[in-house]
Length: 94
Image 1 (cartoon, one colour):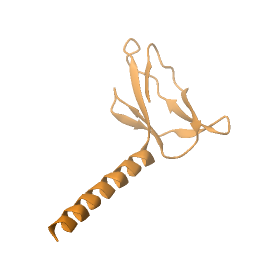
Image 2 (cartoon, rainbow, N blue to C red; image 1 turned 30 degrees about the vertical axis):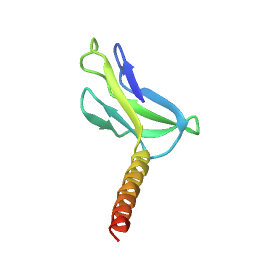
Image 3 (tube, rainbow, N blue to C red; image 1 turned 90 degrees about the horizontal axis):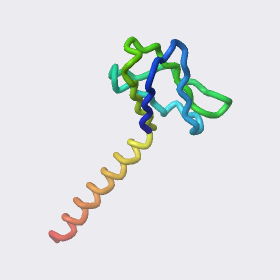
C-alpha cells in the first residue's frame, strides 16, 4: 500500500492499516528512507504505527506499507520455477 499524507504531522500521530495484525507488516517512509519501528495493535486487531512530526510541514509524506512474508512466498515460487526448469532440462538431455 502507498499512503501519502499532505500537511503537517504532529507528534504521536497514528497511521492505521485495517488488516489483521501481524508483526510482518512494515511501514517505510520514502522521504526519510527509514523504517517506522513503532508498530503495535490498534483496536485489538489492526496494525498501527506512530508517525514522527515532520520537519517540513509543506511537503507531503509518503509511506509504503508492505507485508514482507509475502515476498518470501514469491521467492519460494521463484526457486520452484528454477528447480522445475533444471529438472526439465536434465530430463530432455536423457
